[in-house]
Length: 319
Image (tube, rainbow, N blue to C red; front, side, top):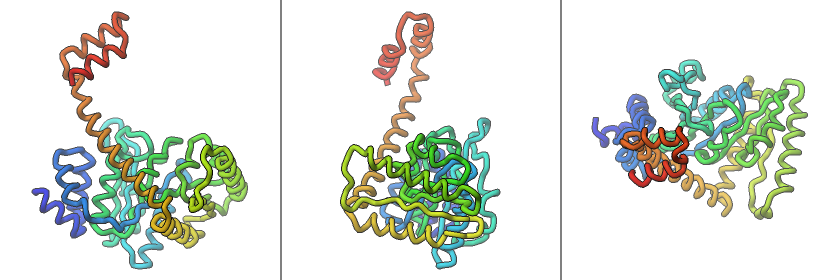
């Protein structure tokens, strides 16, 4: 199938061709550039929402609850669920077969699992381009769910219009958020499983951490700066989901109605461009292993005849 047919299938929101288009960018194929050029002007109105947090906080349950809410309003939703990679196949360990099963037969919902393939930051390296494809397909909302493997899931802020950070009582998440730098990327903070003991303690810890972050900030607050709300939800019963949707709408209005919001969208585009540039550089840099001097230089480093920096300079200069 040529690129024109594939792009037309994406614009027509054909599930099979959507899957093929995402695979093109996920696998880094040569056709990806032409495909993204063909889709560049489409999907500018799609809202991208990122959900991140440590394992067990209920990201998939919250995602499913948001899908229910938006579908009840007649809106279409696409989900990019980023999973950790299998060390053997490189594919996603979990996958959409075990996620949000009640939505699989809904034509207004598209769910795609993406393997992180060792990429840090909680996302697949190709997630921003996959989101562009789904935006071109005309979905009203794209929900990006991060891997959930630790404290490094801050990259989602560069791929989403609004980043929702989920926490749960009794997991020490209020303190972990400070350690992980997650306070800087969260637009909305959600303490899920609020029917458990300790939910209000987690809210209090988080509110204190946010106030400390504001006190030590190197720059003064902008007049129109966004203040992240802290919400309580029980996603398994849709408790607090309407309040979360309202906060998402308020943040969307802030993005379009303030200078700070418009600058935020510009920075997101800068981060996307930087990711593509770095991907190109990594692909080109991989050629150094084919250099006939590579093993010789590595041997010299191992014997102490040369330092790694000067050896690297030799290889870089020959690329």
